Structure formats: C-alpha cells, structure tokens
Length: 420
Image 1 (cartoon, helix red, strand yellow):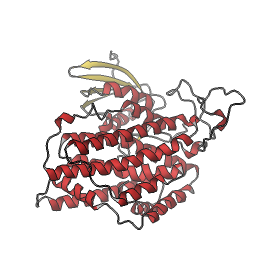
Image 2 (spheres, rainbow, N blue to C red):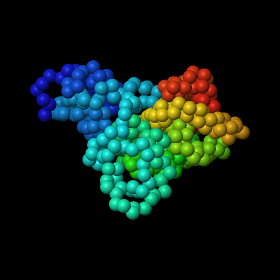
Image 3 (cartoon, helix red, strand yellow):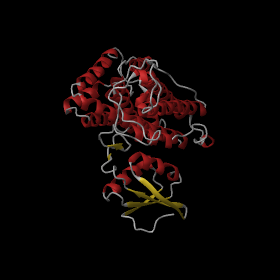
C-alpha cells in the first residue's frame, strides 16, 4: 500500500517506460529531494511493476510502495543515501549512466555481502566467489585479465540489474502475426538492412565472448554483465534474421568490406581497446542506425524489433563508455593507446571502399517509403544526415572521455563507414 506521508514530488508518467525516458525523469526528481524523501509516480505502463524494483536496487534508491490506480498504478520511490547525483544525463548514450565514484567497497546486490573488489586478483582463487576462503593448494587458473582497471566500469552492477530486468523473447514478445505484406522493393530493403544488422551483431557477440574466459571471476560484475551482452546479441541476431525471412524476401547480401571491418574487431587482443572500438565507437553508431530504422520502419514489427534492440545496445554503450573513462582516469597516457588502436584498424581497412552501397540503397528506400521519385531526394539527404549524426555523437562521447576537440574529430573520422 502507498504510505500516507506526503511525497516530496509527484509525476504523471502516462505510459512512459524506463528506457524511453522515465529513468531520466526519476533522476531529476530524486536529485531535487533529500535523502529519505520520496517521489510518487503515476503510470499506466504495466511493465513498471517488474522494472522499477530492479531499477531502484541498481541506483541505490528504494521502491517503498505501489498500489493499483484505475488502469495503472502509483509507485512511491525513496531516495537512498548513496543515490545523490548517481546519474548523469547523456542523451547520446540513451541510458542513464552512474556517476563515477569509488565503487570498490562491499556490494550486496550479487551474492550477499561480497568482499572488497581487489586491484589485482589472484589466479589461485580460481572459481571461488569473491570473499570465499580458498583452501591452500588450490590450482592456479589461466585467467589473464586479473587487473581490476583493465576491465572495470563503475556502472557495471547497475547495468547488470537493468539487463536482467529488461530481457525479452524474440519469439513470444514480437507480434509476428501482425506483420503486413509490403511491396516487394520495400520488403527487400528491410531484409537487406536486417541482414546487415545481424552480421554486425555476430561481431558484437563474438568479441566479448573471446574475452569472457580471460576475466578473473573476482570481477564477477563484469563477467555477468558481459554474459547479458552476449545474450542480448544472440537475441538480436535471432530477431533480425527472422524479420529478414518473415516477409518472404530472404536474407540479403553480405559484402566483403563488411566482413573485413568486422574481422578487424575480432582480431583485437586487448580488452580495453576492443571495448573502445566495439562499444564506444561501433555500438555507439549502432544506436543512431537503429533509431533511423525505427523512424522509417514500414511496419510495426520492424519498428518494435529495432526499438527493443536499441534499448539493449544502450546498455552496452554505457558500459563501454564508463570502462573507457575508468581506464583513462587510471593512466591518461592510455588515450594514445586507444587512438592508436583506431588508427591501426583504419589502416587495416584502408583498401576497402567505405560504406556498403547495397545497405545505403536499402536505407534510402526505407527513408523514402518506397521508390516514389519525389521522396527519394529527401531520403538521400536523410541517410547523409544519419552519418553526420553518428559523427556528432561519436565526437560528443569522445569529448566526454577527455579527448580534445581535434583528437575526438580525428578518431571519429577514422571510424569505419560500415557503422560497427
């Protein structure tokens, strides 16, 4: 039941969900009240009954009460002692990202009260949970990522909570039965874009999967979050492939230049550099790519798939950005390492011709809603603006990490035209 004490703030959220902007609203409301004070949310979004408890735990706040109200509910959230300024608004990432603070003390979100996160983990502790007493004589394990600063991100526990709360099923949550029959040329364009999305997501699955067995289990928050990232990408591959096939057009073309670009990601041997290339630059651009497809989707099924995928990708970008921030904060010279990784990848791809023409053409057809001559010029401009938007958002993210304007612009320009 909702308590009788008056809330410090109220907000009618209508049908807004957390990923769609409610998380930012809650951040603003809670930042304006004192520790222990409450805010009251009126909502008709049925999913909040499941999402708000996990969100509150992950952000250091507390969902203290809920009560049905008409066709919705009232939720009361109390600001926690450690929740002050927990989130910063970063619209280019699309998800609330925890503020930097010393996150190496005890945590109780995972397995009771876990021990302090070590700067360097001992391979001899093996698979023992952090904080457990390990008997003498235990074998050493072949973990190579044993330094906290090589894998850590201060927002990782909160992002893990979000990931587990926001899972969806590509078979049961997508209304495949409502997919309309589209004109052949439009359906082929959708299928081509879905094919391109799927092949990029294979890279986004395989890259973190390569590093997962190298990370010491004492950094369990990172291990578990990357596991959800891999699961997300598997679900995206499934959904994108099903959508390409569902309309009858079949899978489209996979270009050699796309495969070269994705192979260069898989070749990365350093976790921080791979994360920077994949999540900060690649998946960051992917957010804009998915937003474009959602905006011009010719049917609600396609729009729903890419909307759901974009919510997942926002978490991946949030982790990548915060890991890069932590990595650079521990040694500012590492900025040169990240820049060199971008330059080396650009050199590897220098013989390719840039963006894939058949994907660009498919995006133009989507933006035009078909092949109407009068709509095509604006559609071409929309695709050009997509690339410009990706560049602007990459530069903004890079500047937030401490790169100066010139360096941020140069790194962004070097990023592959293949999006990922």
